[in-house]
Image (cartoon, rainbow, N blue to C red; front, side, top):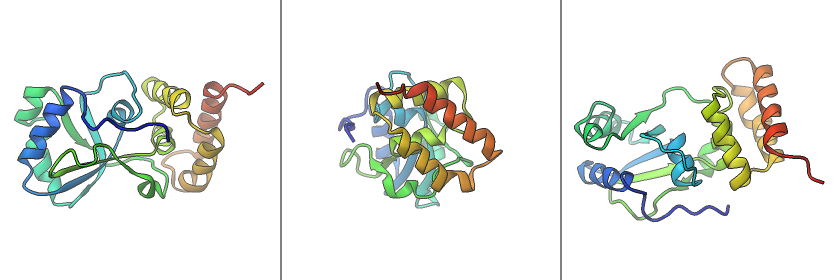
Length: 185
């Protein structure tokens, strides 16, 4: 993959994450998705004020993390940034085998893992909001996404477990492929 995460998050995320890292009582690993990953790992210019995650290890660290850096925490009020657990997400079955360390060695206690670009795009399929479509268009152009891999991963790993009407998601994926991957001449 041509994208390498900077060893340093951009400001104000750098300061916020450093403060979270200092306040954590021990190691915490988060599987991250959403606009934060699109911005920090795949260089999307759109700002985001939340860091979405689907899994946290150890699981009992979730409450501590929310107290330190959740939406109502003092740090969130200071930096206007926060961590947010995503309880329901449509992700390909083996997404966790393709996670990438966002800032290797940067923090003592905090480890942030990012979804692969194809998995990140597929995580946006069920909602399919204008922001999600913009993010997928960005990934298609800049990573670039492979439409055959996107389609195969959807069919093999996401469609069998997708939340909602699978045929609607089939059509959405095909619309994305037609829109974001111009035919080769």
